[in-house]
Length: 242
Image 1 (cartoon, one colour):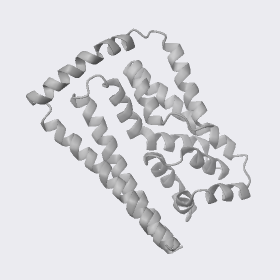
Image 2 (cartoon, one colour):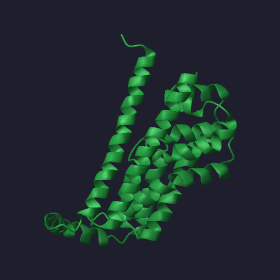
Image 3 (cartoon, one colour):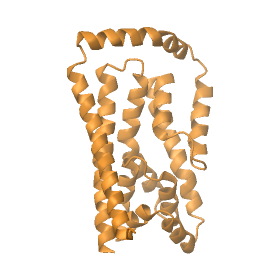
């Protein structure tokens, strides 16, 4: 029977492997940039473009901007209560159906709503309930243990890392009484690279072999791979110290 330490070691190795695979995906996309103009690739790309022309034309005919805005903001707010569409999907959708300047603004406003709902909910929690919240996720508990002075930096990192529990972190910072304005600003700064990359990818979705589409994806995969490995390493070190 495996001991707890062996299980943790196996888990950290698996997460590191995932990080490496994500970085490898970034490498594949970088390689694709060098062969983007090759005749075989362009031939397949032309066939793809022909198939999506009708879809692109339909998307361009969407004119009820306010309805789209309300729908996206409603999804962001709902996500703070129940896990639904992931943030990358919502960023891509807005980039796909809205003008670039508007899609950035909508995603920023949506993220503010998303991180605010659970923050204010967390302000109502007692110390005992915060401890229980931390106990539900070992990695989150390990991540936030230690000197409270590092909390702004940890907030930024937790927002930059993909798939880190957004709502749990929001509740923790609300319960700690962290300054709301600083909390929102740091959260947005952490989300910013992903928000920009996914929105640009959505905007250029119908041109998948274009540099403006591939570069954001390369940035996303690189950031994700590095952050997965970095956070996993930090958590492993902290768990050894406990």
